[in-house]
Length: 155
Image (tube, rainbow, N blue to C red; front, side, top):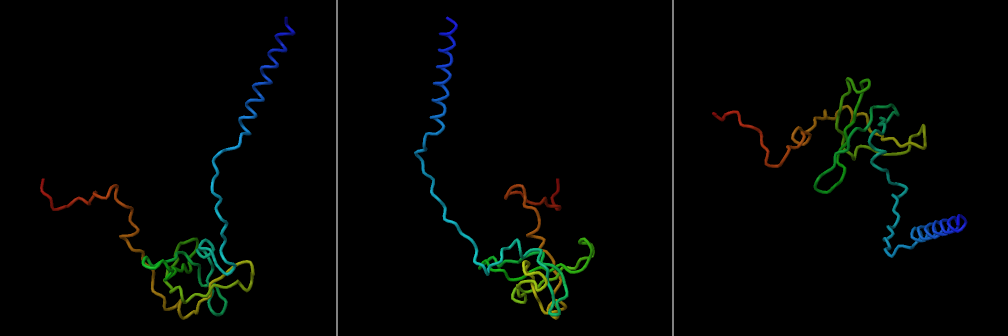
């Protein structure tokens, strides 16, 4: 009797394993569309490589690093860059604005695996100081209808 019970239990377990394995390998009737692959052209530079890029003057001396890209809302093109100059660990750093067209992105002459932005020193010397727009940099209100309390109200 024990043998029959053992054979019956083993048979049931084998059948259950076979059914669960076939359920896992059952092909899906849904087919997901395959997205085509896309990669930038060899001459393109991705934005994460631009922000933080070293900027050198026409004599090859470091003048700072690109901190921000300014994009025209109307046509989506980069118009200016914010250049961080001087300072130590961000303390005492001066931020100036350069026109995007004043920069020339090219391979770094000292390291061909890295890109560098070249700019005329005169452009850097005459560049205006960068000042962030306060209305755009402020955190949005909790809801669109939220407004600032008026101080001239009488209670």
